[in-house]
Amino acid sequence: MHNAYNAKAYSAASATSPLAADSILRRNPTERDVQIEILFCGVCHSDLHQVRNEWSEAMPTVYPCVPGHEIVGRVTKVGSDVDKYKPGDLVAVGCMVDSDHTCPRCQENLEQFCPNVTFTYNSPDGHLGGVTYGGYSDSIVVDERFVLRVPTNLDPAGVAPLLCAGITTYSPMRHWGVTKGKKVGVVGLGGLGHMGVIFAHALGAHVVVFSTSPGKTEDALRLGADEVVISRKADEMQKQAGSFDFILDTVSADHDINAYLNLLGRDGNITLVGAPQKPLAVSAFSLLVNRRSLAGSLIGGIAETQEMLDFCGTHNITADVEIIPIQKINEAYERLLKSDVKYRFCIDMASLKSE
Ligand SMILES: [Zn+2]
Ligand SMILES: [Zn+2]
Image 1 (cartoon, rainbow, N blue to C red):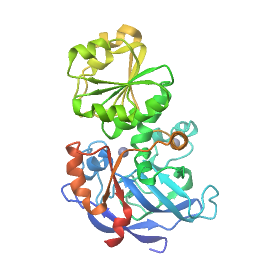
Image 2 (cartoon, helix red, strand yellow; image 1 turned 45 degrees about the horizontal axis):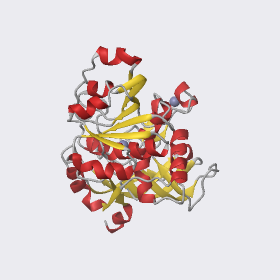
Image 3 (cartoon, rainbow, N blue to C red; image 1 turned 90 degrees about the vertical axis):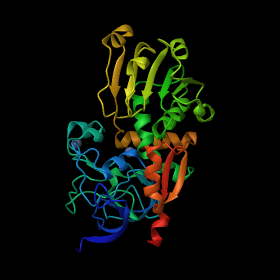
Image 4 (cartoon, rainbow, N blue to C red; image 1 turned 60 degrees about the horizontal axis):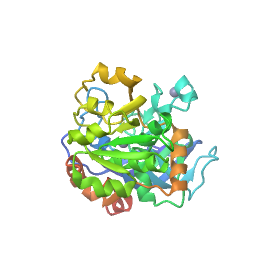
C-alpha cells in the first residue's frame, strides 16, 4: 500500500493466543498527522480485557489486536499542516486518537463521550480500514489534535501511565472540586488508586486510603496518604462515618458500596472508576442521608489531559512503574491478574528492536 508502511508490534491473534511479534500497517502521515517513535507504553488492565475479548458484548475484539493506550514517544515526522509539534518533541498519546470534532461533546472538550470517538486500539480505523492498533509497537501516527505535550522534566517511563490511569483519577477529582481543606478517600491501592492518592495529596486534600491489606500502609503513606483505614475493620470504618467530601472508588471486583457511601458527609460524592462485572447493590438510605451522590467517570478530554500532564510537570508527578521488555508482556499479564505489580508495568519499547 503506497499510503502505509510496516511497523513492528506485539499482537494477539485470538482471545486465547499469547501476544507475539508481528508486523502491522501504519498510515504515512497526512497533513495533520504526527508520526511518533514509541519509547514507552504502560500496561493497562483494559489491554488484557480487550486482548482476551472479555468485553465482547460492548466492544468485541477484532484480531489481530495490538493493545496499549499509555504511549510516550518522540516525534519523527509531521504533516505539512502541523504547527503544534516538530521532530524531536517528547509527546504522548492516550486512550483516544480521533473524534468527529463537531458534536456537542467535542465542542465541550469532552471527546471521550463523542459518539464517533476513535479509541487508540480496537476501534474502526477511518484511514486504513480495519481497526486501530495501539502502543505495543515501535511507532504510531496520530492526528495532532490528539497528541499531547510531555513536560521534559519528567521521567518518560513514569509519564506513560498518566495517559490512562492518571487522567482517569485526575478528571473526577477536578470535576468534584477536590482542593485544599477537603477530605478525600481512595478505595483500592493499585494502578488507578496509587495515582488517586498522589493527585489528591498534590491538590491539597486530606487523603485517606482504604485497603484490605495492612501490607500497603507504608506505601500509601509514602505516596501521600494522611491515614490508612483497613476496610475489613468495622470499628475503623465507623470512626470515619459522614466525614468525607469525595471518595474515589477504583475497585473492579464486587464490593459493598454502601460501606463507603455511609462515610460521605453532606453533598458528598463517590465516583466509580473501576468496573465490577456484577451490578452494585445500592441502599437508597445511603444516598438519601446527607444528599449523597454516586457517579462514574471515564478518562478525560484532550484539553484536560494536557492540563493533567502540565500539573504533573509542575508538581514532579509520575506513576510508580516496573519497566519490562516487550518479551515479558505475557508474564506481566499473569502478574497483573494477581495484582503483583507496584503499580504499573511499563514496556521499554527499545526491546522491540531485537524482534
Ligand atoms: Zn487504560
Ligand atoms: Zn464529537
